[in-house]
Amino acid sequence: MTGVLNIKHYMHKVELDERVFVRRNPVVEAERAAAIRDLVNGNTFKLRQDDRGPYYVRIGLENHCLILRVRDCMRNELPDISISLSPFRKLIKDYFLICESYQMAYSSGDKGRLETVDMARRGLHDEGARILQERLTSVAELDHTTARCIFTLLCVLHIGAVQPW
Image 1 (cartoon, one colour):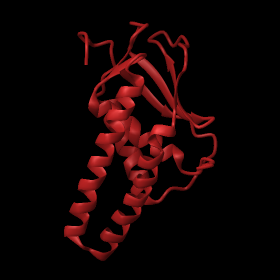
Image 2: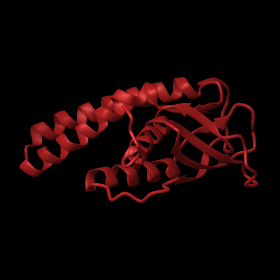
Image 3: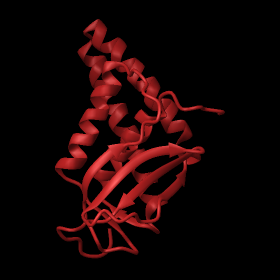
Image 4: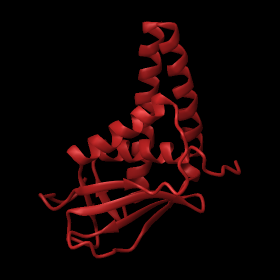
């Protein structure tokens, strides 16, 4: 990450733009809650063209894009950040397969399988975070942990979304 970040460079509040409420399985709901908690408790986020943080961010999906609706510290609207979901297509699919595998391993009590699935989940989140950072590099600076949490929320929001793939 370039530049020096300071106390203004973080998301003060994070919300999901959930136009349609979808009942999620407990594993996915736990991931959503943990991602939001982790983001609020510690994140690094700075818009390259704006130094008026901390920021208020609403994360949503629209037209097969991830949309970050950002407001500055005075709650003034800033330009939306929009990135295509195409680079994430396979990772999102794999995320849901891993959630299913985790649920089956948990139900069976197979601790070895749980560890294997968790390692795969971490690897998937790392890859999603890397792609997210890469796609956002021209508009925002964010650390790896922040990118991982946003990737988790991207996957969570994808539940119930129309998927023409």
